[in-house]
Length: 128
Image (cartoon, rainbow, N blue to C red; front, side):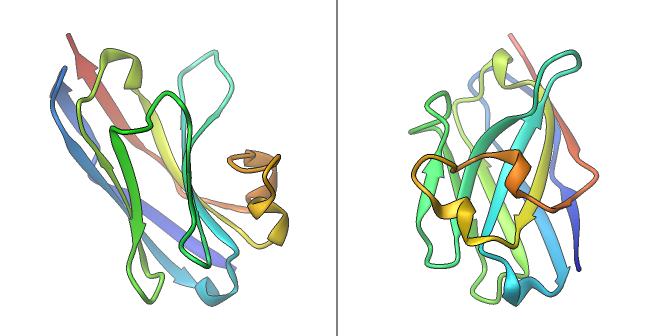
């Protein structure tokens, strides 16, 4: 199993920056992908960014050029650096771990159904 705990959320004005952290413990060496997802009440969960075990990253079009995903060498901490934040980035952000190689497929990246372990989430609110 993998345990995930997020931190770093908060309130920021439009154009501001935040860095989210996700502390991972357990069988982190078995993960194929780590990802960040976000959800707004009443809407489906959206994939934001993921990084696979080879360091290859994938981003949602809506955050390309503004967000950067990274992790420590031991995969113990996952980060999401968010710059140029917009009000539409407001959401509950969760980190997740995938234990299947399928997460690295070109047609299945950022698919939450492929992620087995989830953190409790951290709220990000961007005001205009």
